[in-house]
Image (cartoon, rainbow, N blue to C red; front, top):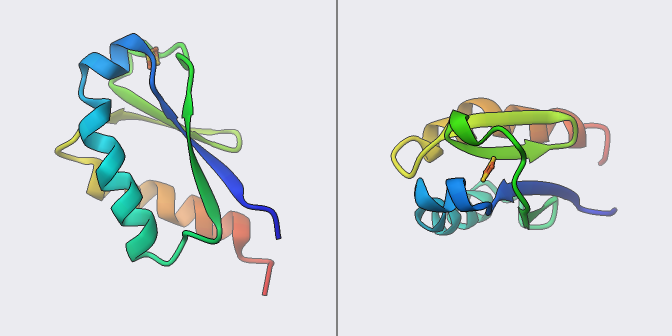
Amino acid sequence: MAKENLFLCMGSACHQMGVYDVLPKLQALIKDHGLADTIELKGSFCLETCSQGIVMKFQDQRFAKISPQNVDTVFTENILPAVRAATAHTP
Ligand code: FES
């Protein structure tokens, strides 16, 4: 099965808001939730919602207002259900 891409904005605004502190936490979360074979974390150019905090994108869904402090919560409450829903049909 092909992995689904999970994009993390690496644009300059998101960079200033601490994306390089978010990145290792995301990598750990993906591993901890057993998603290493399901999703591929990729850097993205500016997603054009720079004023909304660090932004992530999964398929057609966007997750904004991410910070190094809340990334665990956003991942567990918002991104994880989206990923699980998108990959649920596969055995
Ligand atoms: S730099 Fe991240 S949305 Fe623009």
